[in-house]
Image 1 (spheres, rainbow, N blue to C red):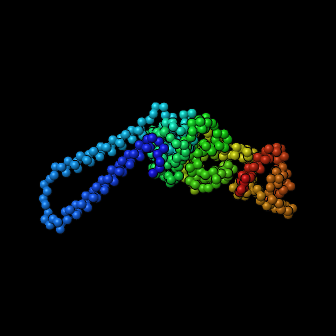
Image 2: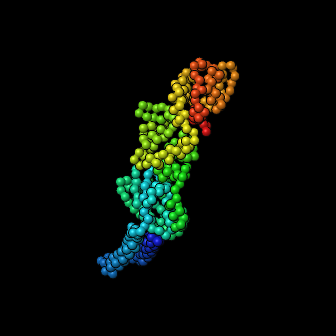
Image 3: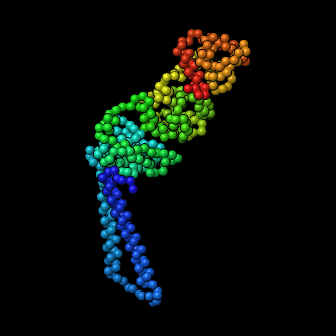
Length: 399
């Protein structure tokens, strides 16, 4: 048995041990009586059965003793249950939101986390609900388990008396990744907790925290592994085959696509994956912007701008992005591709080649294509780099 971390947990353990002890004693007594009856009233000793009309003492004993035992167990059980439900008035409140398959903890100052941080020796009240199906919040070390129900608020409380990390589980089957619906309670010293409580994460740390708190990382990995949903690693600038109202098509993952995928995920489903809940009502614009900035690499490479430039300059009218042939070579996997020029020479399409081919296309006519591309000498260095970054995004291993 896991050692109790709270006073209430100790009470629960006492009730368990009481019931276990009484049950064991009853088992031993009944077994002993059965053996005694088998020996005492064996047919070799009593070949003729006796007709016993009744025994007042026996009837009183088997009525009174079980009644005392049941009432005693009920009393101790009720006392521990009352302790579990009687929340101190000064308890710190934390809102717990369950969803498939993650926990979100929101504090009174608005701070959100996917891990439950609490101060040592401070009562904590958990107000709980679910946004999809029934889950069950279970902390074995604290002996608390409470269902979270859609459209309903339930609660539990505890007061940890030992610093450490304690597992949080879901004790109600809630779907394919039920076993992965895990988190921890981190019990910290008062000063350490106050420092964490008043701190604010920045940059990537803040964005990853948001992804965790909204349950995104329960289905989308950050390391490239495929889970319930597509990985978020290098997602910006990638090509995705999606299914929408008009059928199946290739989609380029730019900022607009990422916003649609979060706000209206069912409008464009990535082929091979199921839908996800919409965050249109649940995610403030500030959080959405922070997540988008993280997924786009902080806009270190402005792929949206590169694509918009190529669309505005007419590049995509002749150069496809999906591998198909139009009037010029496709831009799909263009970076690093070996090209054969009209003079018979061959060269790799590196960044320098791409920039020069945009500025002076007649110098780099690819075999099999007509010299119809105009010069784009009016483009600035920044605009040329944005176009090259976009072409990197259309190529495998585009980093």
